[in-house]
Amino acid sequence: MGCLGALFKKNSEFAPAYAPPTAEVKRDVCEPKQVPASVPKEVEHFEPCGCSDLSSAFARMSAGDADLPAYEEFSEFKDDAVRETIRKTIDSYASKLTEISLYISDHPEESYEEHKACAKLTAFLKDEGFDVETPYKKLDTAFRASYSHGSGRTFAFCSEYDALPGVGHACGHNLIAVSGVAALLGLRAAMKKHDIKGTVELLGTPAEEGGVGKGVLIERGAFKSIDASMMIHPTGLMGGRYGVGGIVPTLAICGLNVDFIGRAAHAGMAPWDGINALDAAHIAYASVSALRQQLHPDVRVHGIITKGGDRPNIVPAHTRMEYYVRAPAAASVKDLTAKLTTLFEAAGKATGCKVQTEVTPMMYELRNNGPLSNHYASVMKDAGHPVLVALDDFTGAGASTDFGNVTYTVPAAHPHFSIPATEGKANHTPEFTERCRSPKAHELTYEFAGGMAVTAARFLTDDEFAKEAKKCWEKDMERVGKP
Ligand SMILES: [Zn+2]
Ligand SMILES: [Zn+2]
Image (tube, rainbow, N blue to C red; front, side):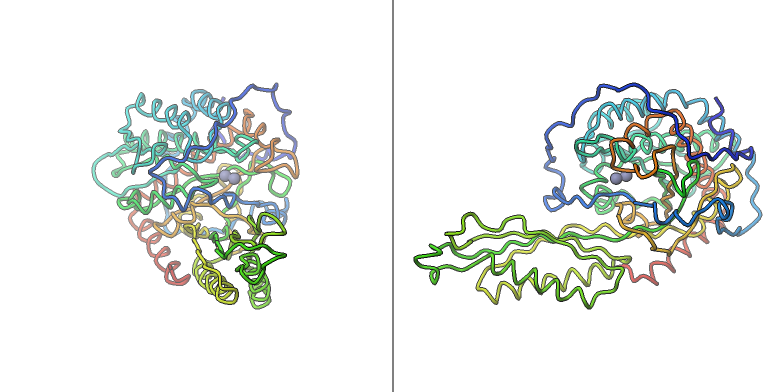
C-alpha cells in the first residue's frame, strides 16, 4: 500500500463518502482521574476543550477554490530525493504505526494519565534506536525522542495521545500520536541518506484536552533548544470533503475561578447576622454581563455558578463561579482577565465577602508561521491534497489548543487535515472515534505527516528559509504584543 504515493502523484480522489466503521471493538474505560503531584494545581481542572471546530472555516472552501491555497516560495528549492526517502520510509512503517494507533484508541486515557500510550510509543521509539527520555520535565506521561546528525538547527514534532471522558479518542489523538512518530522516522532517514545536519525531536505532549500540557513543558524549558516545531491534527469533513487540509487560527483562552466567602446565618430568624456570598456572585455575574456590551464581537466571556448555597433558609456562606475568557489574541485575554478580577473584587466589597480569584494558565491563540505553513501547503498541493492557509482569519474560530503556546515560543505550525467522517459528526463525537480507526484515516495521517517531515527537512537544510521563518515569527510576536 503506497501511503505516501500521493506526495508525488496528483491525487484527485476527494469524495465525501466514507467507509463504514469496522465491527464494535472492546476498549478499556478511562480510570478515575489521578493528577500527578508534578502537575501544577491550578491546571488540574482547566478543561476548555482543546480542539478546533473548523466546519465554518472550511464551509467556504468549496470545490472551486480547493486548488487555491495561498502560498509563495522564498527560493527555488529542490527536494525531490528527500521527499522520496521520507515517503518510502514512512510507507515501510505504516502497518506498525497503525497497530500502535489502534492500541492507543483501544486504551483511551485522559489528560496526565496517558501511561499506556506513553509506554507503547516510547518502547517502539527505543527499539528503533532513538534517544528517549521519559518521564520528561517531571511529567510522567511526557517524553522526548531525538536523533542528531552533526550540528545544526533543531526541529521538533509534537505528538498528543490523551482521550476524552466517555467518548475515548474522539479527537483523533491516536492518529496525532503516530503522525509525529511517522514524521520523526521519515526525517531521520532523510537526514542520514542526504546528509542533512541538525537534530530532530519528537515531543510526547500530554494533556491537550485538559491541562495545557504544552504550557507546562514550555515553562519547564522543553522548547529552549528547539528552533521550530509542527504537529498535525485530524478533523471531520472540510467543505464536505476529506483528504484536504487547513492552517487556520484558534482562539486564546483563560479560565477564572472565583470563591466568595461570606458568613452563614438563619435566613428567617437573623439574616442581619449573615454575609451573603450568593449576593456577591449575583453582582459579579451582572457586572460581567454589563461589561459584555463594551466588548469586541470576537471576544467571548462565559461563566456559571458552580456553588450557589446549600439551603434557602441559610444565608450562603460560600459561592463559587467559573468563567472562560476567549479572544483572538492572548493580550486581549490578559486584559479581560484583569477586568474580571476587578469586577469580582468589587462584588466582594459591595457585599462584605472575601474574594479568592484563581486564574488558570492561558492557552494562546494559534499564530501559525507563514513560511512553514506556506511550504507545507505547497508540498501537500504537489501531493494532490489542497491546504487552505488563512493565518489571520479568525472567522469561525471557536476553540483553542495548547499548541498555541508553542507558536508563541518558536516558529511553528499546526495544520489540520480532514478524514472520511459523517457530515456534522466531527471531533468530540463517538462517531469520530470510530472514523479515526479506519484504514483511510491512517493512510491520510501518513501522507500529511510526510508533508510535515518534508517541511522540517527544508528548515534544517535551507538557511534562508529558516531565517525567514524566524523573522516572520519575530514580526508576528511584535505585532500581537506577546504578553
Ligand atoms: Zn479535542
Ligand atoms: Zn484534539
